[in-house]
Picture 1 (cartoon, rainbow, N blue to C red):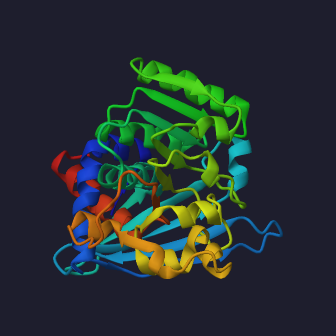
Picture 2 (spheres, rainbow, N blue to C red):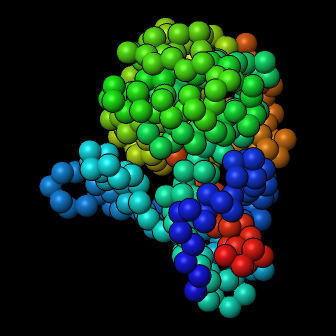
Length: 322
C-alpha cells in the first residue's frame, strides 16, 4: 500500500486541477454514478465536549475506487501550532477490495474544500467582482485565496480573525505570494464584509456572527467553517434573505446548523434551498439565479470530494512514480 504525504498531495493536485475535478465529481454525484454515506461523527469523551472523530465513506464505482476519510477535529490544536483537522484517506480498489493508498487527509481537505467553494462561487457570484473577504485566517484562508483567485480577478482582500497575530501573519505571507493584490487587516467582521463581493466564513464558531444588515445586496457568501447541527456562522435573518445552495441536500439537512437552527426557529423552511452544487454543475437548477440578490453556498463537506481527490492523486502518483 502506498503512503502519500502532505507535500506530495500539494505537488500532485493544483487548485486549477481540483476545481475541474470537483466539477466532474459533483456532476457524477448528481447523476448517481458515485455515492456516499452520511459521515459518522463522535464527540470524544474527553470532558471538553469539542474534540471530534469522524468517518466519511464513499464509493466511486466498480471499476474505480472506494474508501473513507478518517479525521479528527481538535479546535485547541491552533494554540499548539498544529492544524485543527488531522487524518488520513484510505483508498481501496473496487475491483478486488485491496487497499492501495493511505493519503494525508489534511492536505486533501485543504485543497478540495477551497476548490468546491471556488466552483460554487463561479456559478453564483457576478463575473466582474474584485473584492474578497476572508473571515478566519487559518489554513482554509490560504487555500480559499488560492482557489478564488483561479476563477475571479481579485484585486482587494479583507481579512478578519479573532487573533490579531494570526491575521497579521496571514497577510504578511499573502502579500509576498500575491503582490498584485491589496490586503487589508480588519478589526471587526462588519468592517471586513462592508461592500465586499465574495465572503468566505472559515471559522469554528459556535454562534452566528455574520449579519444581514452588513452585507451588500448582491454579495456571494461561502459558509464553510461549521458542519454540525448546533454550530453556525450566519444569522437566521441572513439565511432567510439569501438564495440558498448546498453541497448536498441529505448532508445539509442532517448536519448544517446554518440551515437547521433557522428551520427550528420557524424562520426558514426546507423549500428555501434553491439547489445543490451538483444541480448547478449538471445544469439542472430550475430556478433562475438572481445575481442582484445575496447568494449563499452552505457546505458541510462530502466524502465523494475526498475520494475523487484521493483517486486522482493516487493515479497521478503512479504515473509520476512518486
